[in-house]
Length: 507
Image 1 (cartoon, one colour):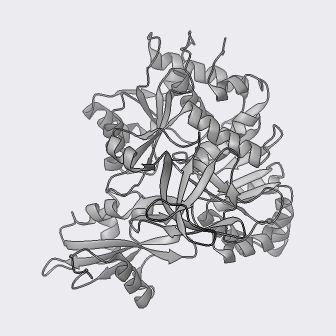
Image 2: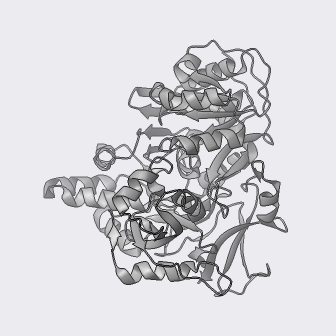
Image 3: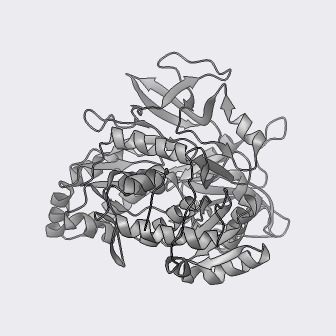
């Protein structure tokens, strides 16, 4: 079948034909098989139409060959791909479906019972992906690079996540800068153990591999021993993960027998690059991983809105605690509160400009306008340049928390907790944690005569929040600390958790 396309990823896949593209629990699949499967998906989605014309297509599919075939099929049909977080609750999924106005929903058979009622309530066309892959392919539209391609959800400074829209051109730019900087090649083989609703997994791992003609081994989910087994197999050349995963891999290595430890450490020597990102990496974790693996983890900085912007070098000195310098084709500057560039050594907010920067927040023109200053995207993160390299100091907004590589809105969690029958007031903050980067901590003022503990709060909240958004620290207070204007002083709340130690917490 013909696969002529102006979409960069599809056009490049045509060059790799019989090479292995994806390996998952079902076997190994070539680029040709991926092209054929995605063509079938596109045909089934079109249902006789010529072009989906940027209709939003949401999908809930386990990571693997079928996930990629579905994503590519949506793109080839002219749709906008909306990958759904597989660990989300029904209310969170319903919010994304409603916010995007998705017209089609694709899913695994295992997710049908969760998603079918949501699709029915919103009159969304629901399709099992098995049905899509059995379809015959037909003529597909010519989709150009300026068209919208994907919407990923990230927590912003409001209490609801915002949909980040990237075009096909944005995605290609995000891929190209990493392929150049990290010298991707066709004989590379990378292991995916990250969720596929973030830039980290979708762009840095899967898309960079498939752009390069490399092979992507895809695990359905992260599991320490499964990752170590793949590394031990000796074929993996690249590995990318969040700090939390490295902490868990260190724990699994330390729990192994001495002979096994030695074998795993030797196997790490066969990899050419190991990367850490999506959250701050503690220097102690970096040093311990280097002792175990021989690798100085390459730290980089990026966001859903911009892809990757800064990176330590592939070759040369990597400075612990830094995120390096701007990637090829990406402009970065630090500015003060008035938007004026700061002098070297002076902290400032990171602003980014270039073709990798997103197009818009879906359906939120005011938020899109407010996110830019003179063409520069305002990241909300503060950094300083020391000896020519960038070091991240923290987030400009205390309302954005990072836990286990996830970016979480404190306001969203607070809105949920206030609905609990025992809660009168609440404040959610991040507490520094060696494994998770930050723990979600909730300070509550209870209604008269009511009581609550952390296990019962988590049990109640898990119906509304994804697991990584659940509080793992709890303080019950008589009043929340407020300033003269009545605003809750979040730094004072965070300090309370530091003062009381572990308190009421879970691991």
